[in-house]
Image (cartoon, rainbow, N blue to C red):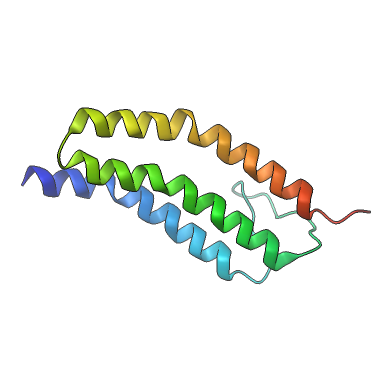
Length: 107
């Protein structure tokens, strides 16, 4: 029962993040990053969205790993979640800005 509760508590976040990656992968218009902020004007929409999808998929990986590891060792899973947040969030923002620089249409 403990394992079920653990998985029910930890799996929704990586599933949502991976779902966001799939949404970005198949989107026809530029994918946004921040809520309520439209996507930038980009030169290659497909490449931009695929790069954005890769960012979200990579960001979901530590949380999937934490869900699996947590079935065996909760403290290790907590460390993975903490590292996923403290390292993953800044890396995600940095990667998004790098993708924006690469694909933003030159005026």
